Length: 612
Image (cartoon, rainbow, N blue to C red):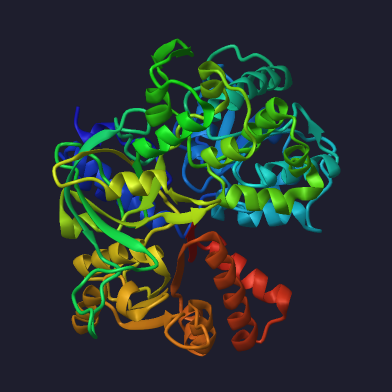
């Protein structure tokens, strides 16, 4: 069957439909997937009123009372996948459903909804994902309507190593009830082991949908068609990528007596190059690479020593039997602690200090424990009697790590590059390392690294290459902007590229310095503003450079530039505050007006953030 034969009915004028039919005639699968991605990119600035489509390709016209609406807000893709699975199960049951990303949901329709499920993640210290900022602000604000006829349920995804675990889900759940809506089940609060909470929540959600909407006589056809290409590789089944190169790109003195020597430095940052040859994996600048790491052996030994357990002890859990040391090395989280872990330790230890920390009024103190305690610190500080089975059952499953991709496939081919900050610090009288970063930092060329691609559809270069872009990426936050600049150069984008970069020291921390200098010479990078905080008595940060360049920054935004921020959560908050100052000063706006200005940039897809 030819491609032309399967083109569905569409709202296109007849002449455009004929042209489209001619265009796709005879194209192979790879070309069709590329074309679908190209069209999706063009559509980013024009979000549809709904993603739901009834047979025949026309916009869904079911009355609100006769359908379920599933809305998701997702930063790394987990909430999106959970929402897609829920929608698929509802469709398979023959019930009408539409699935929308939060920034595509028309807020004006909320007053007419009768059945609404929200699946949403919480970022950092209680922030919504970028694609849900507008909807969360609307529901929380004065313009939100009364909802006495709405039935709803909320599924939250989060990380219990943060004090505000699933905070956004809780706030939405409470606010919808406050507006008069009927809660169908308590808000689900899923930790890194998502399915443990999400699965029973979905079972109840499907039962509630059947009760509310009624059993369908015939299964409803699918009404959501994803444009992305589904890879066979994921966190559960990663691709084994070969390490082509790993080079330390920080800590080098470029002038003075230590020229060309690597010595002590605040940070060790590695440039990592991996081969994706034969994987079929595709990525775009802005996406992340998932690393399925193995915990360092030294860390495993420290945990065994702190508990007095034998690593050879066999442990059976969830139908799997392995030695304890293997559970700890490959299948359990050892560097990130969680509230459930501390609660279990408190029960076993009966130490009043730990019990006090878990009380709501001591949230700030608990957050500091999350910041600098790893599992071994908890075991040493609050010792308790553990069996091998109890320890494995208490610890969370190992969580993969995501790294912003620092390359464009158009320039590097079947490779993917990363910028990895090797986490090392001293705390509680002992040296500490990051699990994934130390795993990568120890690898030699030729080693195999389990990887997969995590798409980030809201962090993309503009489809319109004539648009200017402003990139703010201190430290390793600069990684995706290396990919952005490469991509824009390879496609011949006419828009200007402006980079703000910051670090501690010019000599030792200026990541990719020679590449940026070459890019400036080749006019691939048009402006570069730098802030090295420790090179002078008065510390200078990127947010101060933003304020200094505020007039030009605001002019670029007014003329359609896209704005991007990547880096640590704290930096993201500081940069956002600086941007508010810039907009207030140069746009003549008050505080509320400045917030609305940046929210509108989010809504238009012109303000992208990748913070962690």
